[in-house]
Image (cartoon, rainbow, N blue to C red; front, side):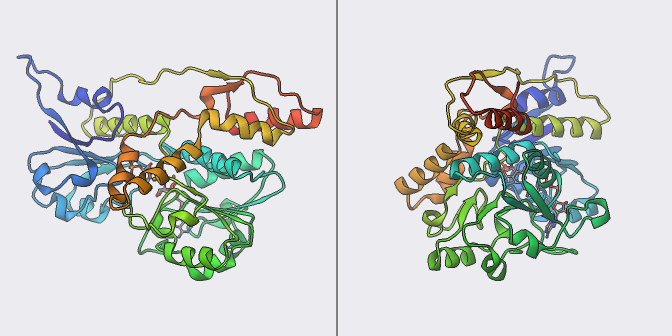
Length: 386
Ligand SMILES: NC(=O)C1=CN([C@@H]2O[C@H](COP(=O)(O)OP(=O)(O)OC[C@H]3O[C@@H](n4cnc5c(N)ncnc54)[C@H](O)[C@@H]3O)[C@@H](O)[C@H]2O)C=CC1
Ligand SMILES: O=C(O)C(=O)[C@H](O)COP(=O)(O)O
C-alpha cells in the first residue's frame, strides 16, 4: 500500500509503518511518502492508496479525480478542507480526528487570558460553537467559577440549557470563537462575525478566534480597531492563511500562526486516531503502541500576591503564548515580503509543547488562605498534575 502523508505529522512513521510492513521476501510491501501539505497535488496521488493530510491540503475532485485513493484521513478536528460530498460520491472513505487537540485549544485560551492580565474570576465568557472545543472550554471555565454561555444554532437548547443567542454571547466580557467553517447548510459560519457583530462587542472585552479565520471578517475587525482600539484581540486563525493581513497584525494583542491546537499531545493523538481509522478501514487492528512518554515536570519559584498572579507566573512555564506571538511578529518584520512562507515555517518548526497535565506546581505560594484555596482549585480545574 502506498500512503502519502503531510510532512507535518508527528510520529507518522511510528503509527503508519505497519501498513507498509516487509513482505516474506523482506521487501516493503508499499511505501510511506511525505510532502508539504500545501504542495500536495494531483500528480502526487496517481498511484496512492491512502492520503493522510492536515488542514492545509484541499482534498477535492481536482486532487483526486485521477487517483486510486480509497482512504483520506485528516489528523485534525476541522474538516472544511475536505470535500466530503465528492468523497461520498466516489465511495472514498474518510476520517478526521474529533477532539484530538481540543484540550490544547482550551489551554491556549487560558494562556492568552492570563497573558493579557484578564483575571477570569467574575467575568462572563461567551462561547461561539459548543462542540468538543467549546464545551470543553465551557466545562473548564465553569469549574473556575466563570459565568459562561454559548451560542450554537445546531444544538437543541433542551439538550444544553446554557445555550443562548449570539447577541448574548457578544455582550460578554470574553468572547471565544470555536465554530467550524461552513459556507452553506442551516448555519453557515463564513464571516458570521462581521461588522454588525463586531460593533456589538463591549468596550474592554476580549475577542478570541481559535476556530477558522474565515468565520471572522478581518477587514471589519481592523476597521473597528483602527477607529477605536478598545478591544483586546487574540487571533490564532486568520483570513487567507498563510497570507495573513499584514495591516491587522499590529492591532492584534496576541497573534499566533494557527497553533492553538498544536500541543504535542494533541497532534500525536490526531496521528494515532487516523492510523486507527485507516486500520479499521482495512479491517485490521492497529498494533503501534503509545508513543508519548508521560512525565510530570515540577515547576517551582512561583510567586504572586494572588492566585491569579501565581497562575500568570506558572502558565508560561508550561505554555508561553507570548513567545509564539513574538516569533510571528519577528518573522513578519524580518521578511515583510514573505509572510506566507514565514507563517508556514513557524508552524512546521513549532516547539514541542506539552499540555498542563505534564506539569505540577512544586512550591508553596505564600498567599492568604482564601487565595491559596483558589489557587489549588484553579490548578485542578486547569488540569495541572497534583
Ligand atoms: N486553531 C486551532 O488550532 C484549531 C481550530 N479548530 C477549529 O475549531 C473548530 C471546532 O472544533 P470542535 O469543537 O472540536 O468541533 P465540533 O465539530 O466538535 O463542534 C463544532 C460546533 O460548532 C457548532 N457550529 C456549527 N456552525 C456554527 C455556527 N454558525 N455558529 C455557532 N456554532 C456553530 C456545531 O453545531 C458544533 O456543535 C474546528 O472545526 C476547527 O475548525 C480545531 C482545533 C484546533
Ligand atoms: O485540528 C484542527 O482543526 C486544526 O485547526 C489544526 O490544529 C491545524 O493544524 P494543521 O492541520 O493546519 O497543521
